[in-house]
Structures are given as C-alpha cells and as structure tokens.
Image (tube, rainbow, N blue to C red):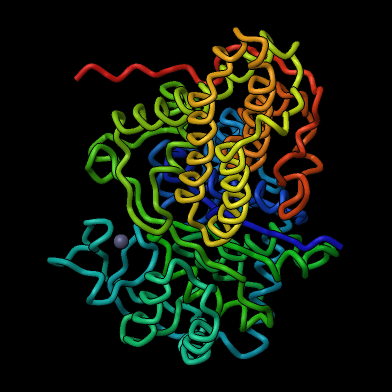
Amino acid sequence: MNPSYYVTTPIYYVNAEPHIGHAYTYCVADTLTRFHRLRGCDVWLVTGTDEHGEKIVEAAAARGIAPRAFTDEISAQFRAVWDEVGLRADRFVRTTDADHARNVQAILQRVHDAGWIELRSYDGLYCVGCERFLTDRDLENGRCRDHERVPEARRESNYFFLMSRAFGWLRDHIEQSPGFIRPARYRNETLAMLRDESGLGDLSISRPKSRLDWGIELPFDRDHVCYVWFDALISYLTGAGYPDDPTFPARWASAEHLIGKDILKPHTIFWPIMLKAAGLAPPRHISVHGYWNIEGRKMSKSLANVLSPLTMRDRYGFEAFRYAALREMSFGLDADLRDASLVERINADLANNLGNLVSRTLNLTERFTGGRVPAPDEGATGEPERELAALAAQTVTSVETLVTDLELHRALEEIFRLVDAANRLMDLRAPWKAAKDPAGEPIVRTTLHAACETLRVVALLLAPFLPVACAEILARIGLPSALETARLPGDALRWGAVPVGAPTRKGSPLFPRLEARKP
Ligand SMILES: [Zn+2]
C-alpha cells in the first residue's frame, strides 16, 4: 500500500468572499499534494466552508435572506472561484452537509459520555465578532481588539468543554513532537499560551437556541447548538472520511493542516484536546503561515484593498501569480504583495529565465537536430556539462528536503538556479554558432541534449508549483505522460533519462512578459 498524505486548508468562514489569503493557502495545499503524489503517496486534499454561527445570521439578515440561502450563495461562490483558477479538492466540506452534522453530534456525544463536558452559567462580555465571551486581555479601551466593537454584557447557561485538564498533556505532546506545530515560532507561541493558562481556561461550546438556532444541535441537549469552532474543526475528520471510510485511519495518521496565523489557538490548542477527548490522535502537522500585506498595508475591508484571486488571474495569469506568491512568501512569515515586485519576479524567472530556456532549446532542436532530442557526444562532453549534471542531481535532493520542510520559496530558488545554469551552458557553447561549422555538430547535439534534459528535470520538479506550464514543457519535449510515472526519489529524476529521439515542438511563449503599471 502507498503511504497516505492528507492535507487541509482551513474551512473558510463564509462571511466574506474568497481573497488572496485563502488562495495562497490553497495553492500551498495543492503544491504539497502534487509533491507527495510525485513521492508515490495516495493524496487527499480537503477544503470547504464554515457556515454556522451568529456572524452568518447577522450577514444574512443584513441581506434580508435566510442563513441557508446566504451560505448556499457564498459557498457556491467559493467553489466557483476555485474552479476558475484551477484549484480542485478531493472533498469540499460544507459544515451544513448532513454527514458533517452527524459527525459533530457523534463526537459531541462521545466527548460528553467521557465526562469532558459540563453545564455552567456564565456572566461576561460577549463579542459577536469573535462569537465568544472575552477576557480582559481581549479588550482595548473597552472594545474587542480584533473587531473594534464594544462587547455586550451577557449571562448564559453554556456547556463547557473541560479543555484545561489536558493542557499538561498537550504541552508534553508539543515538546516531544518537534514537527507537530511548524515553523518553530508558532510552536513556541503555543507553548507560551499554555504556560499562561489565565488566558485560556475551559471552552464554552454551546449557544442557547433561544438566541441562536443556526447551528448543529447538541445531541444531549436539544435546546443548545454547537459553538462554531467545535463544529468547524471536526470538518477535518469529515473530509478524511470519518468514521467509516476504510482509508480514514491512514489518512488521519498523515494529516497536515495548513492555516494562517490568525487561527493558531483553535488549531494548536482546542483541536488536539478535542481529538484526545474523542479518543483520536492529533494531526501530524499543523503548518502555519503569515499574513499578506498589500503594497505595505494590512489587507482589510476598510482599506478596500482586499484582492480577489480572480483579480490576480486577470492581472498576472493565475499560475504566474501562484508561482510569485509561493516564491515571495517565506512560509511562516508575513510577506508584502507589491505589483511591481510580482511583475519583476514573473518577468525575471518565468518569462526570461525559464521561458527563454524553453524557447531557445526548442527553436534550436527544430533548426539543427530535426525536431528531436539529440544524442550527446562523449567527446564534446566537458567539465561544464558534468557540472550541470551534478547540479541537477543536487537540486533534486535539496528540493525534496526543502519542500518536506515547507521551505517552498527556497525550493523554487534552487530549481531556478538550475535553469540559470542551463542558460549559461547554452551561452558558453553557443550551439547556433557551432552549427555553422560541420566540426561543431557534436557540440550542437551535446548542448541541446543537456538543455532538453534540464527542461525535463526542471519540469518534473517544478510541476507541483506550476502544474499547467510544466505539463506543457514535458509535452513539448515529447514526454506528455512523464509526470504520471515519475517518482521521487527514483530513476525518472536521474540525469540522462531523457529519451533520445523524442519529438520536440517549439510552440508559443509560455509566459508573456508583463508590463509594469504606470506610477
Ligand atoms: Zn471580537
């Protein structure tokens, strides 16, 4: 049996339309899925929409429609955007799906039966934005820090999940599993939250139906509905086929959650303890990325600078945007999205470096080697050719390590160093000049063979990041199905495996040059 790889994006809350933050996480998930497929894994990617809670009721009321109609509309909008930019999941979970509601109730019942849930009456300041009671540290000048709104004084009977009893267990688990929360800064942040328990406590997991009836009923008290986080997190189980799908255990053992740093606490504290209470293991990785700022400013509705994935597609081409986003953000840190730097990145790496290697290699094979990948000549193979082959081997190894460690931007840097080296070999050997002299024929063959081989290795390594363009490159060197059989590590990525005589085709430029915006 192949190993499993199960990856999730957050289940996006449908109070807003999809923006580039959502798209970035999805692109990372898609890249990791393709990379693990290359490593021979059975992969499974889940995304979806989180549709319950007070904010949804408010947003629906503002539009004068029922919550169900509202969430149907926004959830469909998310799916339509992902379709349009070519991002596809194996399961799209809506928290309003019937199988999900069943799972939430089954888990609640199980956790309740195991003695982890208790009814308490509670007085406090409640923020509708956060959908929870606030503590002193959530407040600034009497307002919620995150939502800048004045919380309401409320008294309620709520069910509490007795999360605090497992803080010690969670601390131990995090300390013993270095890759559980990554990068390390978020592991440290979680440990700091756990050291200072005054900010955490137990978790209120119900809302009285008299106040909010848009949610999943508690199976042991039909007068209450489940709190949104408890409901949303369980979507990761629903997406993996919990409880009955035979692949669920293997998938779950390999689970990787990709999240933005704004939802650290629910994922690194609530979720592992919920799973423990339900008798399930924590996910393998919780991988946390930073924020995208736009032209140096925070992305926010009030600044009207929230960017849609479709805007990116129209401006750069979605795949070029995807490349630039993965290249510009160091996973875990904030990054700044600037039009000028994206244009420069796309032009330099894709149009010039890679695009140039593709177009000149295939133009020259058409002119000088009969539109076929030529055989190299041993006598014409010198130190520069051997250095390129060595660099290719080294790149395969380092990319595998870097992607596994989520250093996606550095993996891309390495791949483009190889592209660069192949372009330099072309400049050095100048096959277009060598072709003018009959004695230069072995140089032409050897150089173009090395260039085709570089294109093959680069396209296989880069395909997880740039799937459409790399499929096209492989097709143009006569290997349209190379991706289906390539395995990492394995012979397919070894230098010299390009089939001599494969038909080449030059085609149109892969990446058009972008114009900088007028200031
Ligand atoms: Zn708030």
